[in-house]
Length: 262
Image (tube, rainbow, N blue to C red; front, top):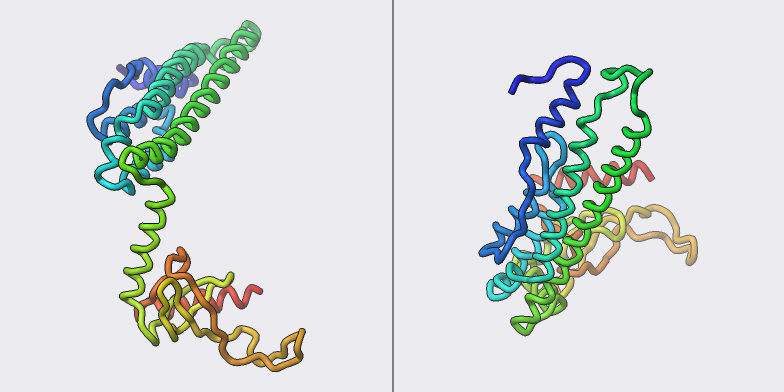
């Protein structure tokens, strides 16, 4: 097919892409997580509608974090599959309305005097409503994916809370093994800080860091602020990070920048 040119080029390219896209059929009994991801990624039209990346990423992240014995239950979850197929059906509906909209020439092409404004507005409205319904269906897929996680864990006698705590414990154990007295870490309390580890506990670490108020007096007690302060940081905190020699200077520079903006 020739490349469209002229005033109708954009519309013709869209119409061409829609005509080349086949309607989606229901997915039945997926064998792997790749089948599930492919079923969601199919909800796209090249140059017209991008694949629902956020939905795909959430499904993949949930599956990857599940214990191996729970993953097959997640793949075969009936409710998740029903929502995915509902989104695929809605995609077909939207695509038909988007194609009918693309078939309408623009006022520039048709001439404003004879342009069927009401018909064009109706097609645009129907396409917009179908697109919103598609987005709603994809939101349902995301919420159902979270429910499928719990159902898969229930099938092996576990729960989201139990798995979350196990991951946190694993994170604490891994970090505890790496930390020792004198290790430099980055953390927040709530500002970004860099400090020196002075004690490692079972679930937390005690950190000593330069007091940003050093040289002033406490407004409540009137006592002089110490040069350093101490704080306790949970080992499973997402803001706790051990620094190597190369990154210490970068962290200090970032902290200085934040302090200068206060």
